[in-house]
Length: 514
Image (spheres, rainbow, N blue to C red):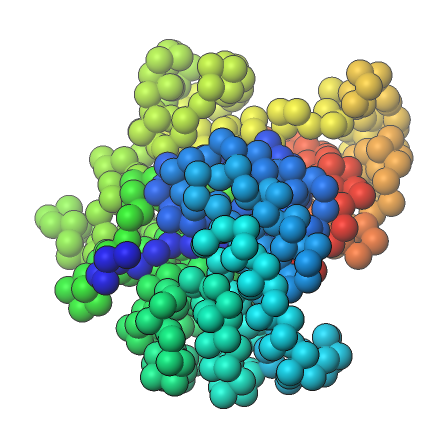
């Protein structure tokens, strides 16, 4: 590996999928993996094969079909996990087995209930087992930033001797502070005698909002692999954001002096795809890929960028895959080829079938509100992707309400077996009545814990986007949908969440935490 290059290890499909409410199926995972390949990610952690037969199958499919990146699977330091991981990744052009085991006293005492020597033996043995399958083995001493540094040095040194070619230092609970984390990485380079035989990696969580800062500090200290996710999704407050790390290295190459292999023009489309398929919205003020990242409202700022973009923008929007030249307005007279071209400029690569569905939805929306801009188009694509191949489909919704009426909703759904189901319910409002009818028809116990509406565009005819979160058992599921009618959007958002719940039923919860 070149000394001036940082390897990008993407764990969106493993740690990112552990975000509360996310339930990706095999098709979703393969679509994201292909997008990561186009992004030119060096290593894709495709999943945790031992966690379920479905995950093993998904990782195996990705390993067979995605050839431009190293394909890694995660494994606990137990024989069954290592074997299952190899079974899943062995089809890859470049497979990797990623073995992890807790290192901190709090984890050893309360989670593993083992002493330090027992854990060292487990780590050595399982890394050696993985190395017999393939030469590309990574080892992670989990919760390393809260562990005894001397014990981490021992674990790392012995695992390199056992065959690890990458050693990853995880800040599993987001505990590190940049200057302290930098010193820790430097100490590993100084104290581990065989560290020259392995690449140092870091995996930072964002509990204190420092995941990207800690990752950059580690790079400064000598780490040459960074583990991150698209949009920074992941356990609790998430992981280090891939797009932020990559653009920081690119924008401040004068200071950092390092590069990546990432095709940054793919960042925006990959971000949108992950948001659409996971149901996790990207906050408007999110760096690099947020809706406001390249928008200017202040008159002073607008005046400046009209003269020279660099007055208030340190990144050219085209470098992350956005078209330059402002928002384009379309109407009902716009043709299919024009819509296809604009979607391509916005970073969407649609099949003919997907394009046909989006174009039909575009025409329907154009009849309702006249002018349609880029934000409407993005919402249409997201909604069509969410509703295609869903288990339950909204066929009819009719509501009546008012200050002198009892809110009433009639709902008709198309069930997975093709049958139509219909029910009428009353509630405290039209959305409440609609939700009662849908829940009776679907018949899956759940509790609505979050409901929010936002306007995608300006004006009274704007698309309204509804986001819901439901709980069923110990699991949380999110749903999103948009429509000019907010009651319809609300119904489709609940169905989106229920469809995710139904798709995920029977899947055991992952034991990995990074």
